[in-house]
Image (tube, rainbow, N blue to C red):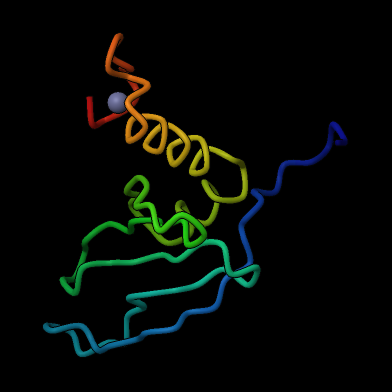
Length: 106
Ligand SMILES: [Zn+2]
C-alpha cells in the first residue's frame, strides 16, 4: 500500500440488467454481477432505490447502498463481506446469547 493511493477501489462488475426508467425513459442499471462471480448487485425496479449486495457462494443478502458505485466499493474493501459474515453468524445462532449491535437482524 502506498501513501499516495487515493483512488477508490471498486470491484470490477458487469451490468446484467438494464431497463428504461418509468418516468424519464432513460436506461438505468438494475442488476450487475462482479467479474469474479462472487457478488450480485440488485435493485428494486423503482427509480431511486438503493442497491443490495448478494454474496453468491452463500446466497446471503447483504447490506443496502445508495449507488452501485458505493456497493462495488463495499465489496472491494471488505465491508460488504463483514456484513455477510455477521449474518451467517446470526443464522448459526452465535448472537443468541449476546446481541450484536451491528447485525441488523438481532
Ligand atoms: Zn444477529
